Length: 100
Image (cartoon, rainbow, N blue to C red; front, side):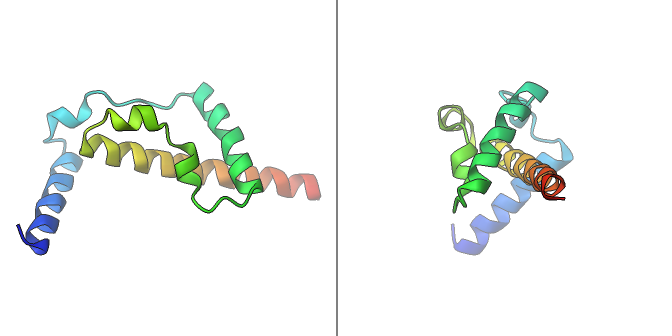
């Protein structure tokens, strides 16, 4: 396949997953619960305070990530990125409150 064909194929796969047509993508998905959120929050604080260059690489569970299919990897990565953004904003708000 050429570059455009591969990109078009990947885009179609993503579109099908968003529409719920990919049944296999819904299996073996790890959800992040509240307890994991608090653990993740402390890791986010550490990455922000240490000025980490690639914080998602620090947060990702590599052993779990390697067991996923490519679609599941994408979903896990974007879920983790969204959690990171949310928790980083929470940390920055709390840090700002402490200063004031």
